[in-house]
Length: 432
Image 1 (cartoon, rainbow, N blue to C red):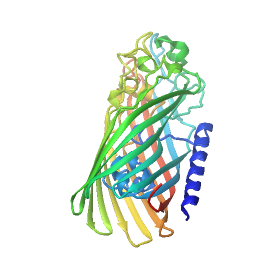
Image 2 (tube, rainbow, N blue to C red; image 1 turned 180 degrees about the vertical axis):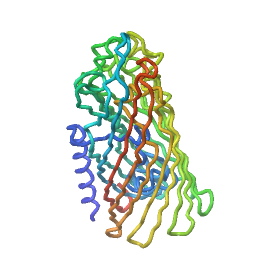
Image 3 (cartoon, one colour; image 1 turned 30 degrees about the vertical axis):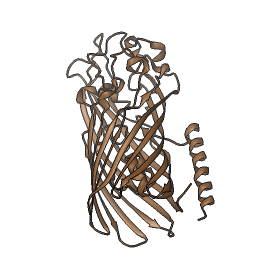
Image 4 (cartoon, helix red, strand yellow; image 1 turned 90 degrees about the vertical axis):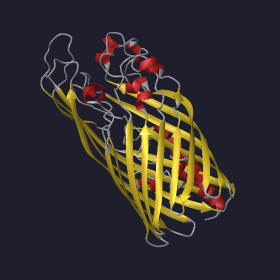
């Protein structure tokens, strides 16, 4: 494909993706490791997110900015179909005792089940030892929509919609023949809405900014740095650190989130190895740490923080999430010049303690295990079609309704997921 034609397709898809996201017909929501995605880019997703030491497409900069320097000039455009299935079950009847917060018993599922997620990234090689890139990707996925009567907290419906969009330019540089670093400023946008929390109004420091205020917006910035090196002839090492992303406050929800609407994005780090056993076969192992405990609105426990007039205060209640450590393994086999095959598995302890069931009905980020497969089919010398399929196995957690009489009610949160990813890649002559 001519270079100008590839650029035209890429930037047309860029504009279409922004229109889809801003109009709500597309999504930037995931909820696989808490609300972080299990991987970045279709080739990485086929390896269950392993690959911080093994860049293959230009969205690799989301995991490790240093990876871009080895990719040459290339565009990647893709689309994902994400299917999270969420439900909660309440057993035991409300006590009716004054001062308690009983829930209607039964099993209830979230109505929002399918999300369409565009992805875009590019890299331009400046010369043999440096490149610049651009990646657009999302986090989010604390998305639920319980349209039941009565809702989880007594209203006719309840749920949240959280999406996070990242626009990340990158500069990558080879330090020597076998080592590279990369740096990325991070520009972030958040979109949030919650409904159905009217019953918590007595606990809010600002009841008019607690719930049902439509979508609120937040903007912020952070940074990433990464390293990629060949430490042995067949062994690569990759590492990256993603800083805490400072975000403006959700003023329309200053009576819900701690610190008057604060909702920064937590820091994370990745460390990985890629071992090429024989030329067609590569084994991958990654570790990822997500520091949810940095963010009060995510990490603060419900009790004892929940008192009359305290939601939204500096130390107001949050979702009680803990940090996550995720372990990822991947296997890639290039069976011919045309075909490359992938498989992966990841596991990590979900972030919600058993004492935090009540608030997390609307944010059930309980997934722990993912299995993935994928492939690349080279269509021509410079173009390729990529596919990945992810299955997040069903996971449930149980705990008490902590605002009821002890032993009166139990809450179970449950989720499973499917995701199918498709992308097309263009390799072009070096230079912008």
